[in-house]
Structure formats: structure tokens, C-alpha cells
Image 1 (cartoon, rainbow, N blue to C red):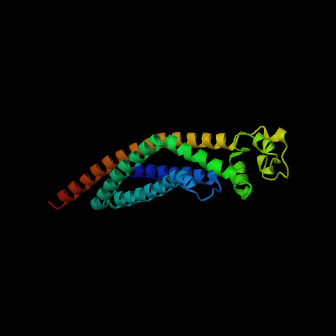
Image 2 (cartoon, rainbow, N blue to C red; image 1 turned 45 degrees about the vertical axis):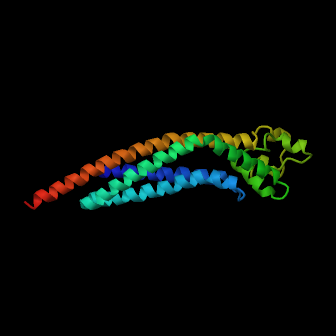
Image 3 (cartoon, rainbow, N blue to C red; image 1 turned 135 degrees about the vertical axis):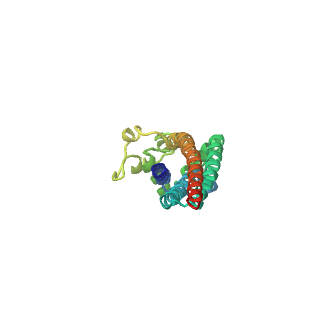
Length: 218
């Protein structure tokens, strides 16, 4: 049981790392309803990873001290987390098209606001190694020069020949989000399965502790 709880802590740490990577990869995004909804998914994953880690630590303490009440509390919390996480995975999978639509709206808004806030577009292009909304030609067709952020962080200029190697930010961000949603789907189901097993093990261990204490008093 203790080894299993350590595995649960590792799962929580992995969720924290994955959520942090998603948040950091998104970069600097303007405060809009679209960006809030797009950012809410990695934030929920990050918070969920922290909760799983803390609860697994609670279970470890209960298992070490052989406290039936603490272990049963851990089991009930695991069952609650299992239900909530399963519902979250189903919701994200059902709403994946709507989430991607929000991402597209967010990228379009960032592109339209580049004249007043080019730093946001630069951050997006550097984070996802992309250029323009759909392609680097969006800049040339608009009569604008290609910004250095279409090449490298340290670049002072960027030629069309260099920029054409990078996809449009709309395509790059959408691909990133689709891959992230797939990871959320399978990893979420896997962690939910582990939580269900943890609930069963916790109940069995708590029952065994009660029986042991009961027999010790006879």
C-alpha cells in the first residue's frame, strides 16, 4: 500500500509538470474571455496534480501510523477525486471542438491587436516557433516587415526565406492544443483508474486495521 501511495505521488507530480508546461508554453496572452477559457484547462490540471500529491501524502501518513480513520478518509477522498476527474476528462473531450474554437478566436484577436501590442504576438511566435496568423506571408501581404520573433530570440531581423520554414501560429497553436487534449484524455483516464484502485486498497487496508485493533482488545 505504501509503495502504491508513492506511485500516486509520482502521478501527482507528473500532472503538476504537465500542467506547468502547458501554462508556460501558452506564454503571454491578453486578458479576454477566450484566453481565460483556453487557459483554464492547464490550470485545472496543475491544481489537480497538487491535490493528488497532497492527498497521497496523507494516505502515506495513515498507512505508516496504521490509523484506520485517516486511511478511510483518504479512501473517501480518492473516490471523490476519481468521480471528479472522470467527469473532467469527459467534459474536456466533449468540449474539445469548442475549446479549439476559443483558441482560434484568441489567436485571431492577438493577430488583430499586433499594431497596438506587438509584444504579445512576438511572445506567441517565439513560444510556438511560428510566424504570422496563417503563414509568414500574412505580414508581406499587409505591407509589413517580418518581425525578428519569426526567427530566433536573439535575431535582429528575419527574412522571408527563414520565416517560411515556420508554420502559422494558428496551425501551430491548434496542433499543440489537440495534442494536449489527447494527452489529457489518456493520462486523465489512467490516473482516474489509479485513483479507483487506491480507493479499493484504502478501504481494504482500513478494514484490516479495524479488525487488527478489534482482535487486539480481545
